[in-house]
Each structure stands twice: as structure tokens, then as C-alpha cells.
Length: 268
Image (cartoon, rainbow, N blue to C red):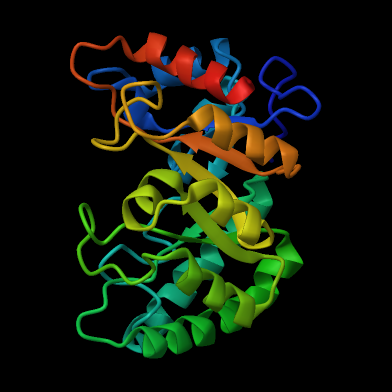
């Protein structure tokens, strides 16, 4: 069983648990080197890494913080379609057991595309699926995180593209182990008003992803969001989940320097 992150990577009391994704390191770096850099910079964990690479994370004292797709569906083919339920339920249950056995706190869930389906019908279908698996998630202590994505720029037709819709689904399921993965970049594109939305819905938000808009590059002054203010709000709310940086370094930028700056922004 993977233990908690080593002391060097564990956040200070009251600090946000910052994580990384592979994309922040740019191209051409081995996964082992990514882990080494993440550990040296004091990150807590690594998002969206499959079980085959968890031993490498353990070697560097990093937590696997979010089980990746396709266990909980894919962006186009997810839990809003009843025809997918039996298949995804099988893999979702496998994911919950794997996460529980290795100390992984979260598993991603994707709703799928609309393909002409009305949002209220999709919501009913998602609630029906989540009610089938929430008991196991509760028993095992694993949080199922439905990801909010934008359907305007990156993922045309994706159903869970507004916070209100996602909160409607999680509220109906009403489980402490079924919440949302709030991707700040995606929701800035779809609806803005980020901090007010987070404050109003924090009980349903289990995990966060960052990224600068426009372009999903660094979260510094080159983009339109004030991430220091976002981080301050999360600290004020006492958020104790994880925040994973998920951006691609802009051309000509040093990925490691950008990552240092992103970490400092969220440290306050």
C-alpha cells in the first residue's frame, strides 16, 4: 500500500496540497525525471497517473491523487448514456478497489457528450449510474469526481460544462463520496465568476485543476485570472483536498521555472 507523501512533500498546516500533471513539464522529459523534479519542488502528488506508474511515484514520496480515465468513462462516452453503464460500472468498481488498496483519494468520472440528449435526461442518467456505485465508494473511502469541462473551445458537446448542472447531479446523489472536479480553466471559459462560484458550492467540490486562460498556459500574469486570489479563497474556505496544476508551458518558457512560480502563487 502506498503511504502518504514523505515529509518533504507534505504541505504545511493550513497550506494547500499542490499536485502536478505530466503536461506542466513540457515535452521530452521522462516520467522518472518529472517525479524527481516534483519531489524536489515539494509537491504533494501527481494527478491522472495510472496504476502501472504508481511505484515510481512511491519511490519519490508522491501520492497518486486522481485515478485517470477510462475507468470512469471518457470525454465523449461517459455515464450520461445508459448503454455505457454496465461497462463503466465494471471498470469504476475496479478503480474504487484499486484506489482504496493504494491510498488514492480520488477517481475521475466523465459524463460524455450530449449527442442531442437533453441536459435533464443526461442528469437523470448520471444520477442513476452514480447511485449504483456510491455505496462502494463510501465504504472504501474513495471520492468519485465528475469533471467539469468547457464545451466552447476544447470539448465540444460535453455535457457537464456548467457548475450548476454538476452540482445538480451531485446534490441529487447526495453522497460525501460523489463530488466535482472543478477545473478552473474550463469554468473560466464557460461562466467566469470563479471565486464566487467556488464559495457557493465548496461542499460539492472535491478537487481542482488549474490552467491559464486563454491558451491553458502558465497561471501567472500572462493570462486573465488572478490565481493568487483563487488560492486565498480556497485557504479561507479551509479546503483540504488537492489542487493540481494542469497547463502546458508557453513556447520559450522554462517548465521548471514556471512550475516553481505556480507553486509559489498557490503558497501565498
